[in-house]
Length: 279
Image 1 (cartoon, rainbow, N blue to C red):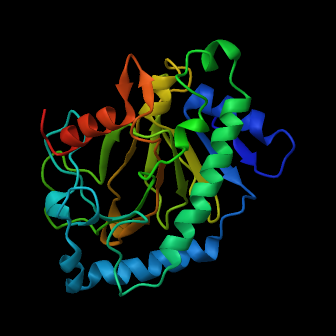
Image 2: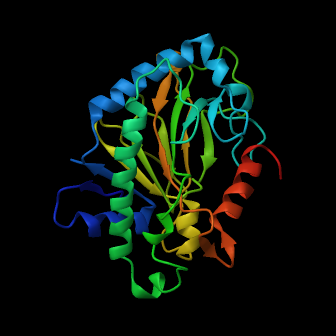
């Protein structure tokens, strides 16, 4: 599968990025402005926090922010078994744990700035017949948005007995416009090609995997597809090692009309219900 590896500083980076997003739903970004040492710092700090029983004090009370232990984490749409993961939702307005530094907050701002630049690249390289169908320019969709989410995510070591059908992250599509994902400290991310085969996404230190979400797919009438991806269970010694991940989900403002009169808020709430197992 021909996922482009795009040098952020290359003159033709915007066009390369948009083409890869159009053809595969993904692109890998290198030579970008996000700090890899900061990502590694966040992985270390939050891994320690997730090992600390005190993390339970931050367990979510609103199903949006705070800590989501494995017992209440997501069930992918169309699946009956929960994913083998735990995570913490970081918004500017949400609870933030005192046991870690502000690195995740600073990283969120940097990653959001990059995501907005990438959204501009998409907008500038999209044909007029596609942009004409949008309710507003993509960049305008982000004005006054408060829902862009940084998720600090850990896939714990596999239990001695893995429930039937349970995987670290079952096949799914992201909900949002764009996802910015720094390389994990362990492999396992795969995406589904048009031929039905699964392809591993490179996790070279310092690289970013960028993918389009369902909101971008819906708003552009499928021009930018929300590609299906998953995180597979490791085998051998790797099964005893946790995997850290740090996706930033770029969300438009609640009242943005995506298509057919459906707002971003309505679409998000529908997907949240599905992730909770409510059909």
